[in-house]
Image 1: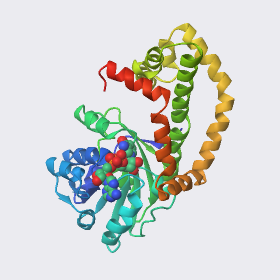
Image 2: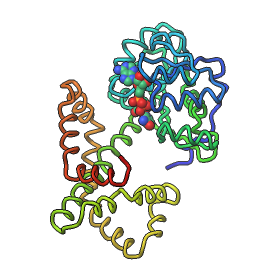
Image 3: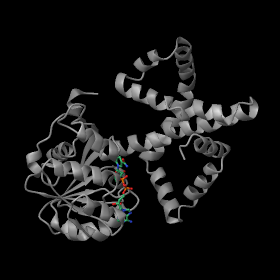
Length: 333
Ligand code: NAI
């Protein structure tokens, strides 16, 4: 991990004479749009006529149909869900920008470029500014005058200045140039791998472990569902641990736990490491070679059969039912 990978500043004046269209005013679009505007950038919004459109109007933006916004812009931030982005791009954005002398197209996720679902025209700088932060976090940190981590990438450098534009946007959306802010020089492929690998390894392993833990202690040891769920996640201890990991580091935070807990973590993580490494390796290969993207595209093409079935199965699990009962008693639902 070289020092040169880390970027702490960007030159906002590069966006001074440009109109930036935020296409999609959702989680990321609203946050990035508002912060860009408050940093003096000329922002317009492109959206379909849905409640997000109304929100953008309420927030004081000029809002247009997506094709009209793309036509008026020099830069577009494509911030609609990854599954709908190719359709939006080909039907509404590309026809309006393909004949411009130059255009800057920004993504917050590598997915569609990595797998070739979107192939921009040669006149376009294709840049990645991918916040490691949810939209609400971006807005909260902006209030506190603090930055956050972001991954940067360039897939096509038509102007010769694509990296500078990526850094300028990172600054504009409040990621860098402030305490706590850092950009990592990365790529679309790398961002896609990292993002999906989290979603395919420790994320689902955590869910699977919770389900198995719950079933074993309640079915085989007579533990009450209430005690199990509070221990697993309902107490909020898990988020405290995650916060400490981010603040002081993975191993340093372990020192906040009892010695018995440390011994358990150290011995068992050694034991699981080799098993898990093979799982991670296989998941990474399926992401890298496009098999996962094909699998997910097929499910979408067939009306999300697997996606909908699995939602039904988890929501009717014993854990989900016990959780619903507990959360009602606790007044969280
Ligand atoms: P979102 O789900 O909040 O997007 C909603 C927006 O998409 C609305 O403006 C809606 O009008 C528009 N939209 C939905 N379906 C549409 C359709 N069929 N045609 C046209 N517009 C449609 O999206 P989110 O979560 O903000 O994600 C945007 C991008 O940011 C994605 O690439 C995502 O991977 C990335 N990202 C998201 C993060 C998050 O915090 N949610 C974090 C970092 C990156």
